[in-house]
Amino acid sequence: MIQLAVVDIAITSSRLVLDDFDYYIRRKLILVLLVAEIIGNHLKAKPRQLTPGEMAMVTSVFKTAITLTEVRVRKGPILPF
Image (tube, rainbow, N blue to C red; front, side, top):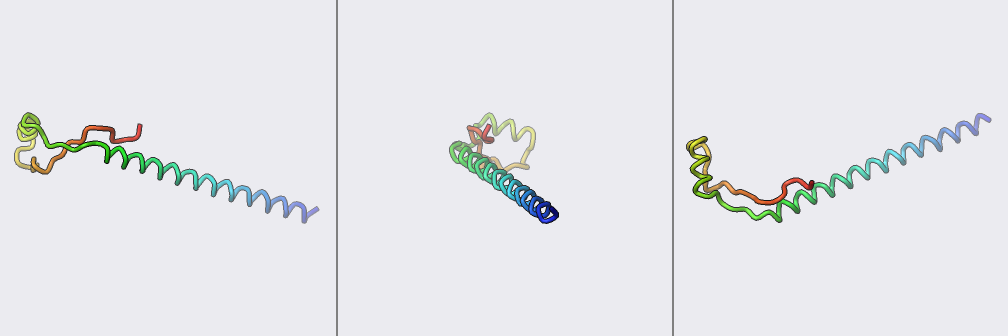
């Protein structure tokens, strides 16, 4: 009877370990897919420079704190949803 209880505990604990491992793998897979989609969306979005109107607006707020020639605007999705 005691041996049966020990075997039952061992089987139950191994199932818990496998369930935890399965959960961990699924979480990592979802994270990898999410990052891949974010990178794909970022690469699809075409960058452009600021328009003269946008440059005037930025300059009126930030003066010379921002180098306008280095600023790029991307049109497109950033997040996967």
